[in-house]
Image 1 (cartoon, one colour):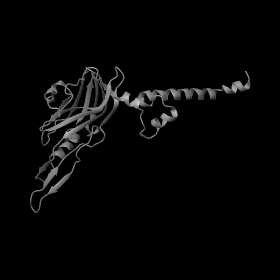
Image 2 (cartoon, rainbow, N blue to C red):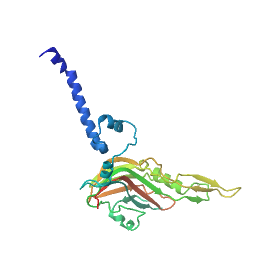
Image 3 (cartoon, rainbow, N blue to C red):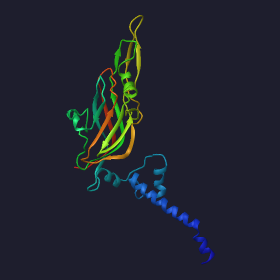
Image 4 (cartoon, one colour):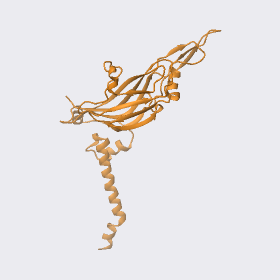
Length: 260
């Protein structure tokens, strides 16, 4: 073999070729997993979509038709929220059970739950991306020096009652995780305001909310399949609060369901 042939296939050249092939294979896999809309694009065209900032790009009519009407047998995939509501007692609660058939009393009220039995219908799948908690502590007025009511209740549920969440899917346990990781998705912002003159009693308006921290990041790594059991438990040490309070657990994600 000539020197030119040996140099052409030197170990360094072969290693470079292997790495190039591996990179192309990895890029193709990422296309199919995370960016299905980039199929058919060259690396030069699609790479900015993977590596650069998120940006808008035009869609072809054929692509829009495919998005509106999936191919035969393919599901519709939509952003969705599954939620359930339970009441923390004024005297304190040791645990609250969410997404279980025992909560069926909520089923007739769509403002309290849309997933009371903890099971999806046939051919439905739900990717969980974020889990939120919403503590519905209503603002109140107190004619006392001590701060009591909504603001203190939210503090107590986090710090004294030491709320924690765990869930069970198809017999597998997850958690418990501290309540502080499960912030609210949005809503009112806490505030304090005092009023009164002279020797009049101090009047304090309080309201309390959990931090809007984006919720617990499951990020699609847990998928609820149809006809399988999902339940979530929130545990406390039964600390008393000023009033019975509804607590909502909401799961933000993607629902895959059949069309028609």
